[in-house]
Image (tube, rainbow over all chains, first blue to last red; front, side, top):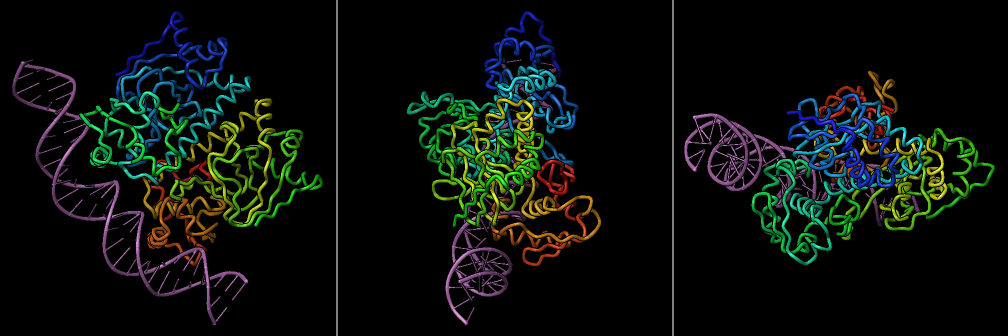
Length: 256
Length: 256
DNA sequence: CGAGGGTTTGAAGTGCATCAAATAGTGTGG
DNA sequence: CCACACTATTTGATGCACTTCAAACCCTCG
């Protein structure tokens, strides 16, 4: 189940390049990146791997090189609340700097992934000594905050088919390319997981998806979607939202 | 409608004391507080006053001295999404430093309030030049982030009466005092507004509150609640939550 | 006292959840 | 390459929670 690969110094420059491509670390100097990477571990994880569970002692934070990771919490009787599902370039566990060194949620790999883990201590050092980096981190947290605000909004203003439409719009590769011409996209993970990500039951997801199909004319084959035009999707989903479509900065690939 | 009172230097030390009592500014030096307070405005606002609307140019951020402020967004057809309802010691508008100098939401005073407004430029200066303050701000944003995570969770795991119970628990003055003995609390604002804060209709709120009364034995007279013991409330509401009751740091007065 | 908003109650409808079962899809060992 | 087991997904039937629309009630305040 667990395949761990600690990467030696030869390849750490690759991880360095990767790290610089992550928004949070985009303005770091080479020296800072080297510091952050000291003692890093790059793990190839299979589906189902638990990276940590809520309450674990937190010494490291994580950056996703590729794949998907589910962030969630559980009630005593096992009901899960999905907080977020993250992918390439996202970080998690870094806010444990401000907890009492424990993780406030659990993290599970849901698709084969490469995950970089780094020392929280070194991150804290960088925050405390480089105001510019602290600003980057604040900016990144502010972005996340707006996303969460939107999430809450969607749950109360959008119905199930609209939420799915909005989810699909955020999977679009690039708004400019997508505009006007037909496009094919693949659902990034289990339909059941998408359902819980969107706060609904798998059965509801299935039915809502076919309602969406009827309403917007999209084509569904398994986990492949064919979209002739995104306009009907926008009309259908974005009418129940306070942001207008190019919903900038909302984790929307088509809007970054 | 608008009663503005710019306070002169004689009273600014009062505002200084107040500012230091706010978590975010707790570790600021006198000098820093003075800097932040330069050009501050203390406004006495009546119910209904709009402090700013989404999209407005943002030059100031706000700190609530007392009262209540609603933070929300609207769809084109007027449906409101309440993002948060804030009170004494809370700040808002400060994340506009990281937007393109616009507010991403609207802010409306919903109870008579005293609101302090301060210059965003000076805040940014402080963040950029004092790593310790940047850390405070990061910590404050991390706290807010956890609260929003919890909010999303509550919406999907708790039903209407449970959400109300949880809301009431968070109004409790102090967990230690509350434990065991009867206590009286007042709802802080309109029931209709509480309803939308909790993501439900006024009618649903009314019915759910009486269900809560039946389930936990609390007493309701208008906006006054008499609670013999908080234990039934905890049993009733917290079973559908991933946090155990002394839900630390979740904006819960009884748990701070 | 009367107007107007906030709150409650009633009746009916809707959306989603739940339970149950069928079907499709995937990976396994033979 | 096929049969089997197992999981993911779909479909059907039913129930419940919340919404919606409508009307009554209550409270406050001029």
